[in-house]
Length: 376
Image 1: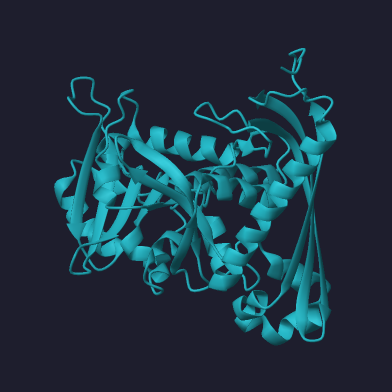
Image 2: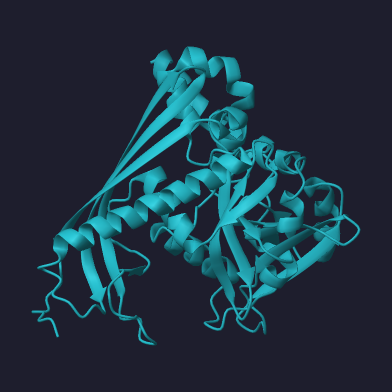
């Protein structure tokens, strides 16, 4: 009896403990969905925040404010002063970083509070803006959707379609401190609308190095994630005896059904070597060629393999020239050649720039389409 009495007595005590934390009513809270960080022409930090307006009679769907401050926490003083409710960053979905910010190698500590404070979500998308953050955060989608939903959908869709990396706070932190890989983030710009333009590459200090366009991003994500859902690939020009003309009659497009990759590291005579083997199954989606594709399937297969191989070789030379490793070759080197990797792990970018990277591409044409072709 005494045992049950003690258990019943603990229930109200537990309820008191769970309610004694500081809580703010929802109606008195301003929920920040987008946080932006940029530099002005004098290299002063400018912080932006965008919050939804839920009132039916409101003329705008979002409220956007900006202020000059030293840190994210410092900016909160201003935002609390102008917002109608107490500012909460617990629901931040997108973090916009101006390109001017990431062009400095010492910018990463700015985000300290977002990792130190457990209220922040580590699934927040981190996006680099080519241009001014104000142009993106003040953009109003023509669909009248909330800007945060528009940005999330654009980033997630293009990541799924292998056009950009979907870098989150958690992934950024992991890649920043991982010695065998360097960070990569989504890249957007504002023209007539906010659009994805590829992937930003950072060095081991987080400094902007270069960016990948949409085609290069596809190759990058193919190898990094081994895509298994259908992806439409960029058109490939097939060399023929006939001129392409204004209607590009030498072009061929295909859909990638499945991608598998294997990276085999080795070490010889003071140099790392990586054998990269990529296999993919494809389906022809578009052909402007004036030949019978089925009778020339072997030729097309070889041409596509050679083109993809050349594109990968160009991409590998690009990252080696910048001494970065967005693919994570260093992770494979540490796993299979740990004793050699340990000696140069603090200077992995230099070691990778001198490594031999050999790539082979093998495709399997699963479908030529439903059209019954005849050459003409």
